[in-house]
Length: 484
Image (cartoon, rainbow, N blue to C red; front, top):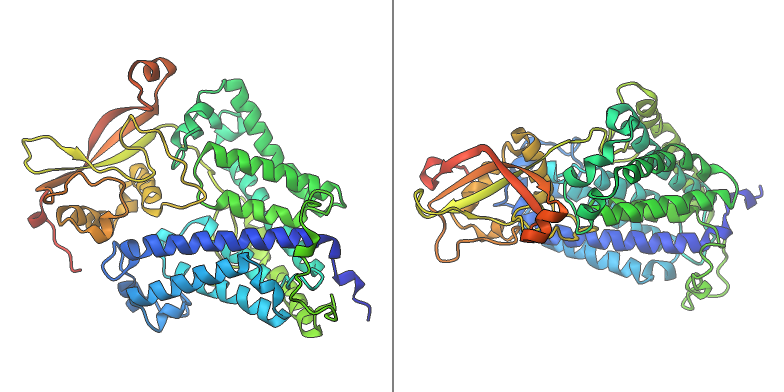
């Protein structure tokens, strides 16, 4: 049996770029784990993992932490994941035999799956499932001294298609603002975490906003079909998606969603657009010259089994995309394969923000806690955070939309402020109480909008805010209790 149809050597440079970008994304995700997991989910975090593990069995949340969890063990696992992802980025997996390369990528996937499956609401974002599904397919791509298997390249393109086309469908179906081209009249101002250029994007002419929406519909509803056409059409489609993702990265902070989508798009690029990739990087000198570009038969069988598995699992996301009740960012199984994706199926027209304040005396002035990324002080320019992910800041955006999103953890955050619990408060940018904790803490709801050009010139403010109501009235430490 001839296997010529199986190999795609012309996608060697694409695999090289894809694997390095994926390794960088994994590294970023593990840095995030090391910095934020313990205050959010650790033994003394806002939603402690040990409680979760007592109630949720392995079959519902497969994770190595089902066998043992401690904050120290979490650090060990996080550091192992970070070091392994850096090794993959430096090309260590490329000098290994096929089974060794697959083992590197499998461990990265399995470790991060173990974290996501116990991450509760803090890890319930679409880009977590997207990283896991991408990472699982990457296991089968093989090292640089073998030819890329064509079926895996096609599966990665199919995943990218689902990401883009699903996002386009949910917009068209979900909110009339996408259909009448007015969505960007609001989005840049009301998105979860604006960036330093978001105000400039928001204040662009409304006619340009409508052009942006049309371009978005074209990129997400038409262009994805080009991924399955012969070159150079597929490369052109991928390049359009990459440019669009860079545009989105400039206009707001969406964690590593844009980075992982760009990573996927690189798999559709042929050598014409990737001729800058050094060819010697694809055949490391440490690899023996007698090694064959064809991977072992067992690897080819594994790739075919993977292809069959993805075809079966694709039933659920395809049914979701074609059905009238389309949902976005849902995993249909516990290993996060064959997921459905999408973003901003509805657009908020008004921006609300929750502002947490403390005071030593209810009759004295209130001082504001400052978060690292989300809007707070009106004079602070929105920072560039992406591709990093500030999980607490994102959840605070949801709380401003509906306080129910804070159930189970917002009270613990208030208690951490009242007790000056630095294990949790290190998630914040500024804690206004250094000598002793506040006597009272409250949460107020504000309406925010970007300042006009005249307001900015007069006072230097980026935001104008209007107080609406108290979300949590002044509370003292003795007014609340917690069992942990």
